[in-house]
Image (cartoon, rainbow, N blue to C red; front, side):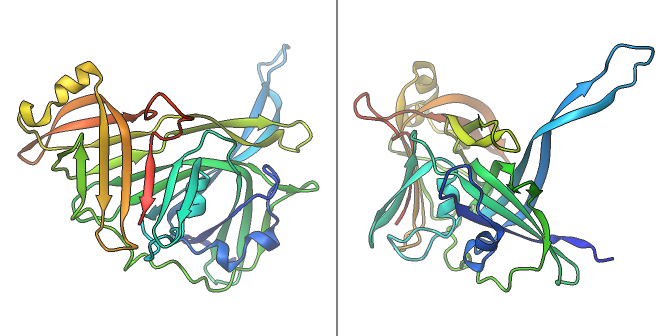
Length: 333
């Protein structure tokens, strides 16, 4: 009997034409939908469960009732660029599945901003491959939305993007889409070698003041919940956005109160722009901008003998006019 190797798995992703209607396997498991290199792919099934323990001579339970079949899918990617200004990175569809809307300025930039409108949902397909390379198990997850964090924990390392998506189990008629198949033929992956911004030569400012940091972590902070539908076999239609709470954590070295002023800003709730920019070559630049960030907390930390402030910001709406959705921008130029 063949075994399934834990590293031999891939993920396909495609936007749903009708939100909440999963893409079928024949359209989902194709080369163009599997080009993003991923690490630590995990798919965890879950189900709602109603225990039944009727009164009687025994405390034994009877068979529980199940419904609400779903999956949680997690994986990690590098934060990379397309290598061409005005061209979206290969993982752009994943950003959109995390409640970010894309604006393309041809030959110049691609910008992602938070989106309070109804988000498109996505179908994910997980391919698990056996050790012979001849057999595959295909699991389809529909109506998905999720969240992403971008983190670099040491100077020189590339940014890592940790993704988490939730979606319903897919059925065709009454057949669960957890099917035996054959592996998709060789995939041409995105170039994450030459187009990989590292945590060096990074510009990081807080209110215009340059900071000396060793790590950075940005949490998109998208919260989702189920839109239910009793006509669906799972009882779920799709995931919908419940809220947004983006946050940024950094570890700037301590400076004088006159230069830094962060304790006063924490106490007063002073808002200011926080900007981090990776890279300098066109097509390989990533800029994260929180135009109206408030410090939420400071911790007295250190890296080696360098004294630091562990600083967490909340990203607020910028300005009191307009429609908002401007608390965060992620720009590729």
